[in-house]
Image (cartoon, rainbow, N blue to C red):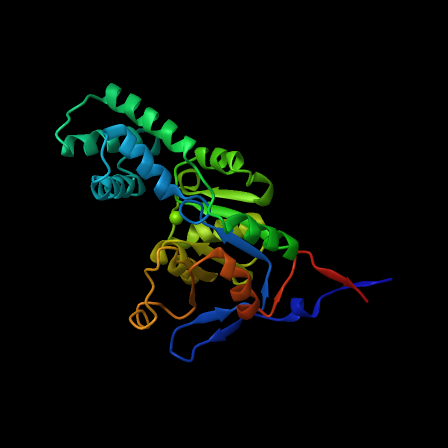
Length: 270
Ligand SMILES: [Mg+2]
């Protein structure tokens, strides 16, 4: 008995320059990257519940999000380290509400908030069926997150996902964050695949889908909240970026967009 690579192994990604923009149509899907927060885990719900419990009201969420984004930008710019960012963010947020606290109190409040958030972590209902399908299809799976560090692995493990994920790529450890190509290319490197053999799925259009597309992967925007309007988004959605409203739709999309789905070391008897 001899073994040979599948016919799909011979195919090459096909550049499509019909609109003057270089895009790739990968012939075979061998791996998938998944964002974690608000893609696999209902992060916004848990974070919002924890914040409400901390301050006793629910109407300050927009200020929290803005303050968080400002502090994350400082981390990405190298002005602030990830470890101290969380307490500094909480201190700045409370200052906007008129509560001036020192660093020690900010640190303890932040730890309390994070404990409450951990107790509220939940998977979206479409996650496990999708991961089961991907595993059955034989593709490798990486979690790719812009978060700070090891707590993301603990989050995946506590929610029963550790066995589904081959690698976890964390921006805070790598020093490169989405949408930079480097984090997507590192995910492909550890997975042992080429970018054109890989799809990335995430809830942020620019960070996840467009970033992945620009890095040579198939970019998929998971629009859980119904932000996408096909009539108005024709120009906003770049060529090569796909949209699904649920992970339940992902298998059909992958089957349609890729010529085949196969494990990295796919061989068949001949
Ligand atoms: Mg996300």
